[in-house]
Amino acid sequence: MASSLTDSGDAHPYLRAATAGVRHHSRQSATAGAPADRAHLDVLHGHLTGLHLLLDRLAEATRPAHPAAGRHLAAAHLRLWQAAAGVHDAFHTLPATPKADADPVCHPDRLPEGPPVLTICQRHLASGHSIRRKTTPSDHGPRSAGTL
Image 1 (cartoon, helix red, strand yellow):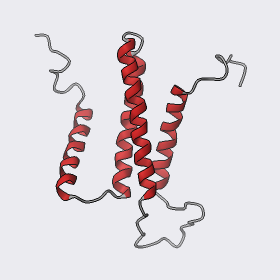
Image 2 (tube, one colour; image 1 turned 90 degrees about the vertical axis):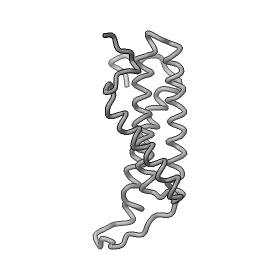
Image 3 (cartoon, rainbow, N blue to C red; image 1 turned 180 degrees about the horizontal axis):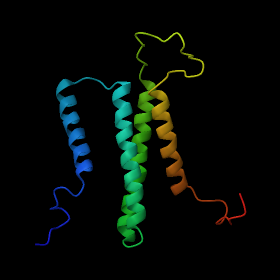
C-alpha cells in the first residue's frame, strides 16, 4: 500500500507536537486574555527562530530540484525573520520583572537585565547573521582558500 506525504501520521512527530503546543497555548491565551510578558515572548521567539532555521534548510534543499518552491520557502524564511524581529523588539519594550531575591553577587553593570535577555539577544543575533548571509549581496566574488 502506497502512502502519500500527507497521510503519514508519524513522519514529523516533534514538529506536530510543537504545533499542537502552539495551538493549545493560543487557545489558552485567547480565553485567559493575559498580556504577554518577557518569558512568554522569549519562548515564542525561540519557536520562531527554530522555524526560521528549518525553513532555511528546507529552502536550500528544495531549491535545486524545484526552484519555484525553493523561492517561496526562501520568502517565508525572510518573513519569519521579520516576525522574530518584531517579537524581539516587543520583548525589549516590556518592563523587566523585578527579581524577588536579588543575588548580591550579581553585577548589573555587566549583565544589565540578565537572562533571558542575553538568551533572546544571542538567538536573535545568530538568526540575523543567517538572514544577512542569505540576503545581502557580496561585494566581492568567491574568496579563494588563501584569502581572508
